[in-house]
Length: 135
Image (cartoon, rainbow, N blue to C red):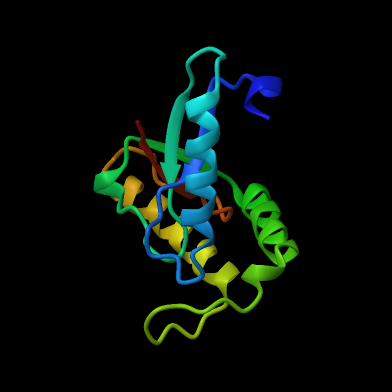
């Protein structure tokens, strides 16, 4: 797929605490493919999900989005059958999609408190995903 698409940017999970091990398997498969890739250079950005979030102070890039995009993200999570009732370390009782929504909302709030984003002037909240630049 790398040869066909020849991406400028690849976004992968940088997550190491996925209790299912799926993220590490995907990382390994991608790394093996990237070693054989003969196309142009690309940037790698890592994100994390509910298992081991990046804190805002750890971020290199923040993708800010609105309520409509968050609803689309929730729909995609609900379409991903492995995320419907995943194991979660600790005593978290929320559904996976609720944790994603709350985490992305809190990321945006922290960016607002830091002055990176302006305060919300409407009833539509902002959300943000935190990325780190990878190797």
